[in-house]
Length: 67
Image 1 (spheres, rainbow, N blue to C red):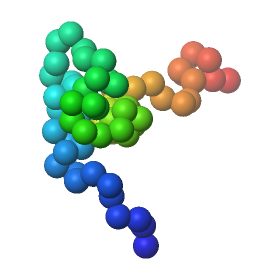
Image 2 (cartoon, one colour; image 1 turned 90 degrees about the vertical axis):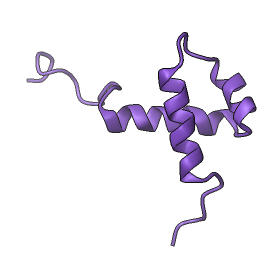
Image 3 (tube, one colour; image 1 turned 180 degrees about the vertical axis):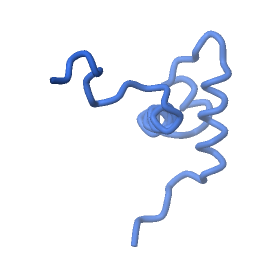
């Protein structure tokens, strides 16, 4: 059984959506403070959302590097 989440899922989704739609991109530490969450939590949510959406880099090398 996993530990209960400290922040509601709705807050996570809203925070990531706010970050992604903001132009210019806000400072994560300031945005987290405004939302009342820890800045590393917000940073992790954003990274995870980018990975889930396929926006981030992958761990495997590009096909031209593989043998």
